[in-house]
Length: 120
Image (cartoon, rainbow, N blue to C red; front, side):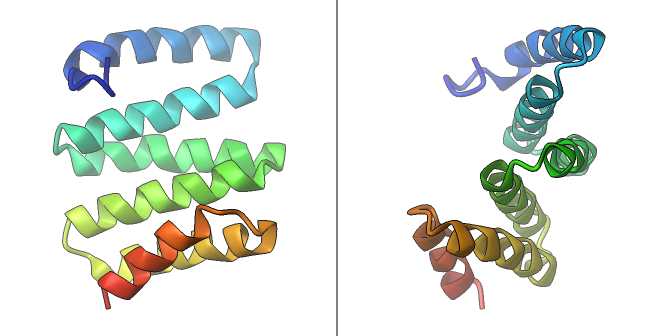
């Protein structure tokens, strides 16, 4: 729903999914759901509300050791920081993302590099 342009409608489903994944102790599902919640808040322009979800998602991915998704979440945090006008914070987040992506030699590194080049 969120990707179809209906983020407000998707939020209750994500909150329910988060509740279920916490009950089951499924850390990857919790992290993914929290990232989706952050994305929804970002799409709704509720930038400050996106940060707690993103940060908890990142913490979980760090505990799991999933480097690629850590990079993705750093990128999302940077995008939200940019939306708030904090270019320096966004650049720090994107730089953290790029370091991981370069280390993994992942093709998504170029998109993050473009963000950094665009927002000097």
